[in-house]
Length: 142
Image (cartoon, rainbow, N blue to C red; front, side, top):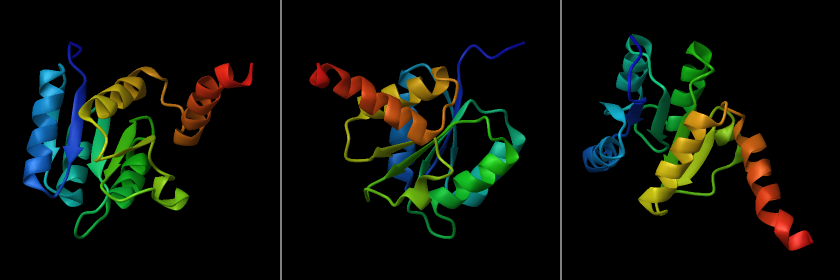
């Protein structure tokens, strides 16, 4: 039987951020698995079907971009959102993720980005960014 809620895997080495994101996502109707770092996140990713991943960039042992690259080799269809307090990140750090959200942005930005990831056919990050840019600037050119 199919799950009624989308299952999101959240990975962060900071407990407060992880639990805060878990509460926000659960209040928004998602089922959430949480991991305190890249290795634990990879174990959960292999053991459970997930609909999307939200991973912190800066973590000891294995940064989020490395976690994302490993996950994409396991299942490239699962969309991955990279979060960071640092930014903008260089393109090579974003090559394995489907979206990037700064932690300084309001929570509704993360939620709307996640919603788009789950409903957008998992277009590559830069294709979606270009589509967004074109749509945003379309009105300005006429």
